[in-house]
Image (cartoon, rainbow, N blue to C red; front, side, top):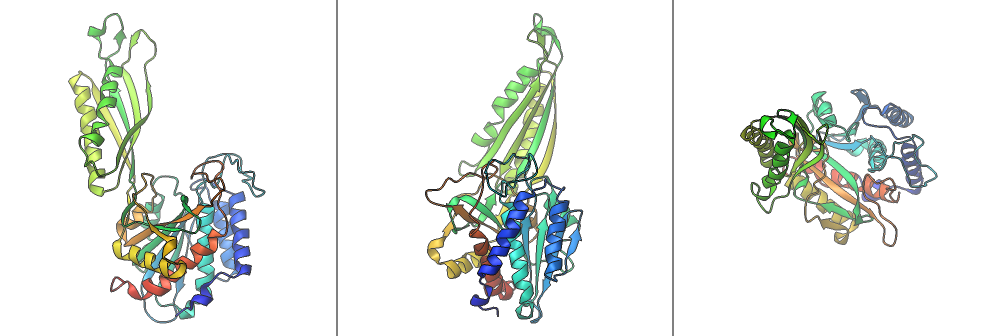
Length: 399
């Protein structure tokens, strides 16, 4: 077994990981355009003598095969893409790519996983089973995780359990936030195209007003939250964009509504799709018009498996102390495509706090988002400790 002392990130490795993080932060790339990021990760793995596999165009995974007998196959995912945001942090290593920024901590996630790879590979003679470390492109886009799954990233051999983290500015620095069940919501998008019949505003009886129909749909959609959902279950139905009409004295014949739905259970997610489509079509029909609904399923909810989450929570308590571990009170209505992994494999996705008292703390996707790099060794140690202390020997009997 790997000793606790051996897995600690020493000063030399910590400084190297900070250097890596700063390079990644300075050279962000958008979803599915992470070619330089992929090449940089590959160059580090080559330098360390660690074999890797390119998956898709910009994804990479590393299999660390234990030399200490049979054991479970454990996966860890880190997202590598950035956002279309102009950075305003003023950091000396700010983004060199105009309008692109690591504003969601993915540079930290990637660095942490690189630290895990480095540490575990040096000690593979003490490992059982296999650890697959996945550097995933396109988390900020649609369907990236599912694309890797379709390409077989969970197979050959089959991955038994998946882990992931997200840096979290809503918790104190170094605090580990866990939750049982849903961690993030599903995220699905819809476009409702309302068709009426154009005409002159002076003769409305000869026309079918698409704006009036759309207003009725807008008023009715929130009832899917207030009247059709359990009051204790978080649900979002939101319209954020409307386009219609050409002049103030013309009855509009066409209006387009664009929105999103979010849910924390698969059942509610499925129901919302049906209800948005039926409600829109029925209201339009009642006014003599039509509604076509294009409903795009994007990310399922991230749902933590109880026994995997318990393993992570107990490991964090042993490593950092119970006071550094909190159970989150509610899921986030934000989304993460790690849900595609948690649908297929027992998983846990946890938060790692970055907020420092008396220092400004900006939310994810903010142009001034940043984090204290002392968080990097904490993430590395928690992943490794959870793997070696529980998951390496506990998958079969659920820890």
